[in-house]
Amino acid sequence: MSLKETPRRLEQYTRSLIFEGPAKAQLVAGPILPEERSLFETIDQLWKSFKRVEPDPEFKETLYQQIMQEARRELSRQQLGLQVVKRGKRSPWITSAAVMGAAATLAGAYAYWRWNISKQAA
Image (cartoon, rainbow, N blue to C red; front, side, top):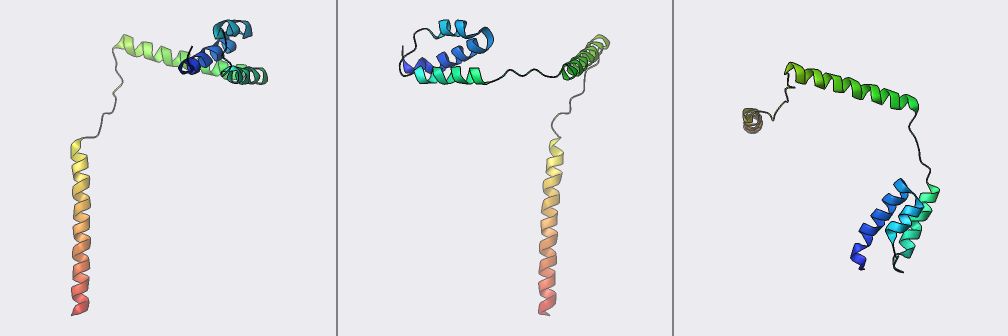
């Protein structure tokens, strides 16, 4: 077994530990190499110290209602044959107009600056 497989083995071990418990995780890990032992021990310590957190029942109910409402909307759209109009990229002419406007502003500012300098010289 090579050390190149270590990240994959650590991930498998962690997933098994979280979802299936320590006994199954030990089976997945198989023989642990001496170089890997400290990594596996760290994962075990973290697993023992972390507490699983459940969302509030109120949050779960609200989320469920929102998901169901959106699913009903989507089903209605499909049944009615409506499609949501997605805004595409802006037309290329908008970019061209912006560039032209910027150029005109710069030209105007340059002309004003030149006029102001010639006025002061006179």
